Image 1 (cartoon, rainbow, N blue to C red):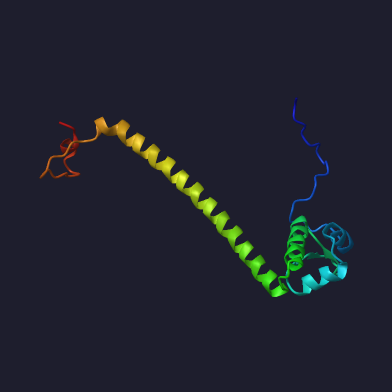
Image 2: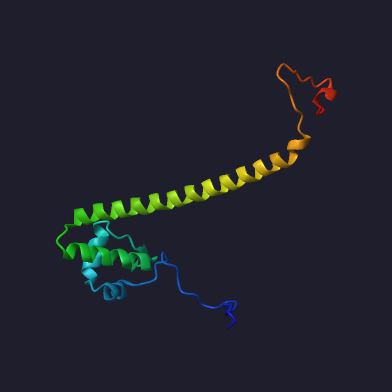
Length: 147
């Protein structure tokens, strides 16, 4: 079965960070009252995007954060505790991302080292053999020749 390519100009769903949901839709998606969403915004737990007129627009990531806040407060954690948990979750996510970057960088450096080693081994027979006490002079290129 062939995969379908999107038509030019086709409408694609918004990304997870695109603020598209008005407060009433966000409230319905999270099961929270719109006033609760405003309270969480004022408390800095969620920072939805704003329209030119100041209306809130929530992204999918904002909706997930609101759900997490609702779950945490439902088990008795206060808003300050929720804020700290969200900060720690964000820090963990950032560290995981950085760790993944470093792992990719290490793999790349290993590949470069392997290529360099292979290239050196291929050129090994062409490299001069120097004996202890031998000096190399750029003025005397014959001294670079292998015996």
